Length: 124
Image (cartoon, rainbow, N blue to C red; front, side):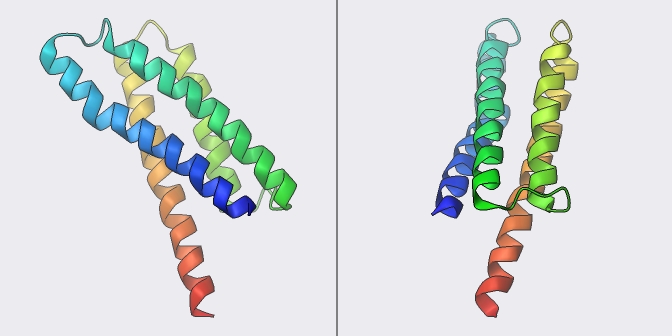
């Protein structure tokens, strides 16, 4: 059951992040609302991503998969750390967007890592 909740949290976090980075940002930029108003949307999604990371880590702790050698754990911690770094770069929105793209890339690795593990588990 914990795996189901981890998948829901991951879907919310990555879907929202990818939606903001690759759909909402270009639309707002084309309309002329980026970076002044568009960065507020990105701020909220990164903040919700930090909450999702904390929920994911707590679920991993409950499930007993909290381990420094667990690749999913490493990716979640890395994504949460970069999300915190995002707020440290507040005056420089271009650097913040680079961090958003780095978090998106780590999200792809997290998704591929867990799907690979699920595929090999179903084959056994």
